Length: 333
Ligand SMILES: Nc1ncnc2c1ncn2[C@@H]1O[C@H](COP(=O)(O)OP(=O)(O)OP(=O)(O)O)[C@@H](O)[C@H]1O
Image 1: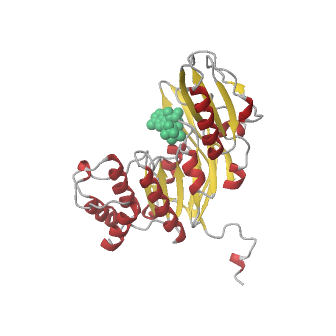
Image 2: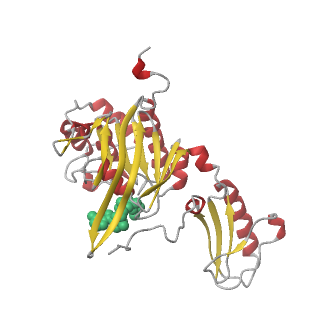
Image 3: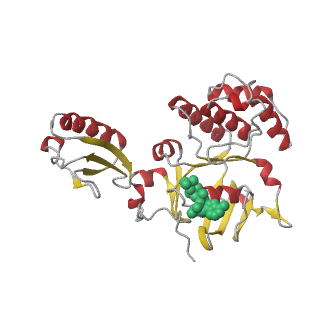
């Protein structure tokens, strides 16, 4: 047996390693710590969900992994070797596909096909029309010959996904890939990721859509104020109690929920004039309660209901405060 690949070798299949990466930006005369001693290891074929509130550092992390910005300190390794040589990003960039902030790098005047061919050849890979058509079929994009600028928002995203994946990258970084996608598009994106992972591609997917990430990603990384706060199996993440909060908002005092909804931990909703909130474990339970409760509240004639919402609540269960979650607009002098 190859001693390099013994069962104790935790680096087997290791694609990328980021060690102790920190990044700050200068803004308004102050400094914003966007990433703080961040470690990350990605292996071939993994599908990882990257969760975190606005301004937590997700895009900065993706930019560092793609060489679009430099970390102030820390090391990036690609297949165990340093990813930079002589200060320049290395050839590993050809093996990466990226979608940033829900957008690809598509040229608006070119068609989906022309963009795909261009980006494939830019990465020095042979362009395959068959692969391009297969990807378009999988994503539900029927027209490859219309300039990008004439496509709908969802189809622009589909075209961008083709451009990002056409060269069969070993690592695919998708930042907000569901922005502007309809439900069918989201399902098709699932299929695309599943197929890629089955072929050995690694996906790191940053999103605010907790449900999308939970369904798709066996591993979840959570970032908060530039620091890694959770990195583990979806099951460990999902089984944290009460990740959602059902909130009723009304103009005036809302009657307490009726007993027949079951003995539950209802709480007066903080910051609401007459609302109630209930911590919940999973969306189906929330949907059922929401429907029953809404029907009952609808019969309370004097009540002016403003909204019934299902809020994601996972940060609190990682011991983090949602209200302090964003580092946006909070530069430290
Ligand atoms: N070019 C920049 N100059 C100054 N500050 C920046 C710059 N880019 C990002 N930041 C700040 O760094 C922090 C992290 O931003 P980043 O975009 O990485 O977060 P994010 O998790 O991707 O946010 P979102 O979910 O809103 O996209 C934020 O406070 C942001 O304002």
